[in-house]
Length: 89
Image (cartoon, rainbow, N blue to C red; front, top):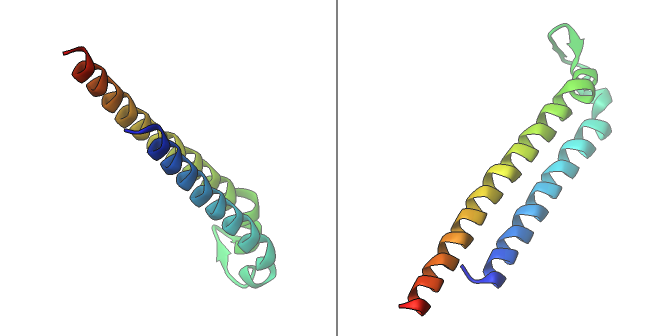
């Protein structure tokens, strides 16, 4: 994988996950009063999402980033080793 392509994919992934992070944080904070009309496990939904739900979303974002970056790194290493083999042959 070309270095520019690798960094382009990395940047796109980072921006996408930052947008998800911002959307989750902003949505819960902005709509907390409206979310409190519903309950989840006996708690108002706005309170639950602020206390626990957003943290779960953050963990999913971090897991997704780590999982996807592992895949991108593996692709880049594979392409690099293939390029090295072709130049040494």
